[in-house]
Image 1 (tube, rainbow, N blue to C red):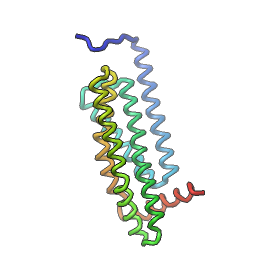
Image 2: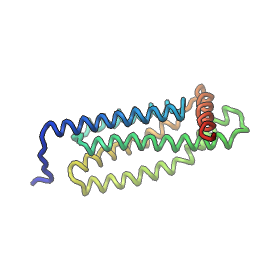
Image 3: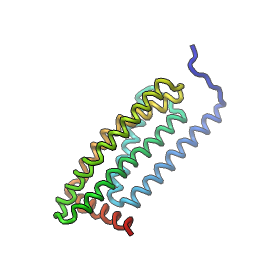
Length: 193
């Protein structure tokens, strides 16, 4: 029994995949430039987490026997966007906490701001992930085979996203605290002008 059947030429499918991969790479480069330009040194942490998240996601896709179709590539692009969203939420909350805790000593200030920033934004990140997991479940259950590829990519990304956010919570380390504080504070000052 056929679930779904489509016939296209080999060159059309190859061109579509190539375009999707190029769009993913261009999106990733633009996101990296934005994060590094806007958040400076703190953006390095975001870029590393997004790249590692993508590499792990691609490894999971290779592990699960799923064909990478255009909807699957769209899921990879969505992964970049969701990774940026989580990082922006975290960094903006940390900047708010740094502004609020200006009277403390610099090391206590940064440590407290990072802890409070993660604690306050955590529920928002969990909410977006759970909502997206529910959507992925419905897409997988009721979608065609290509939509199931998107749902699988989305599910794998969301599964990986929890541990990525948890890993980011451990940084910045003590030797990076001053640089992180300077980076986030200076980007806060430039946006306030």
